[in-house]
Image 1 (cartoon, rainbow, N blue to C red):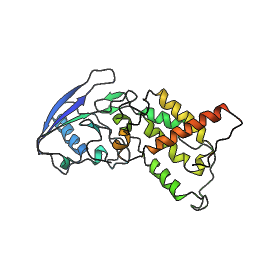
Image 2: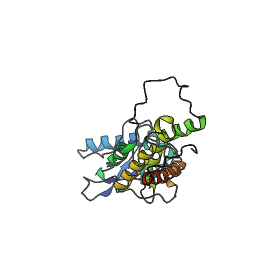
Image 3: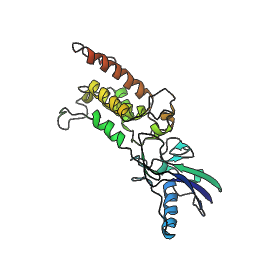
Image 4: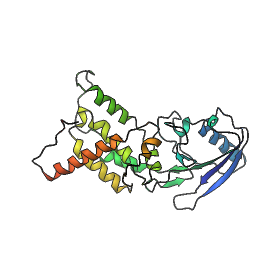
Length: 259
């Protein structure tokens, strides 16, 4: 089938960008979206033109590298699908597709469709880990965890850090990403020792990176390829409020019994 691509081209973070039009013939419906871009790049190389820069790695919906805004939607039109898992059979002959990078201030464009998402790494470094010694490997049943809690922790831990939540949010908020990284540790016993210090540090870093605030549009959950729930944002906000109260009253210990 024939596809017309309008692809964002930008030489660097300080350069002006624009959409560049490419017509592709004989696009196979079995191609993934990234394979289609590969074919376009091969043609550009043969024509002695600069290929289009875009991020990719696993191409299995695991790594989150394929951060593309496709027709104004993060990762494209398919629900719970990364750009690398999107196939051309979801398009029709003669379709025009607009491909752009994430439009988030905290994700500056590096080149073309590649953005710098190191702000997410800095949020993780601020507190998204367990630094206390948790011991060597133990039997799975030695540290009892409620099934409901373990399921919620696992659901939050499936976040791949692609940035679709921030790209889809009208406020460019990273609340869903940050909340997922906070929640998957807050819901297990090993994460309790640093729980409130963690949420203070990670929320502060998120704000320092220039992300917007959550105003409950819920577009982040709709765009997330892993379906991370916005209930994690509610948990983060609750923990943050508790943490701020505790930080002002050193004699008061946080109450975890209600989790």
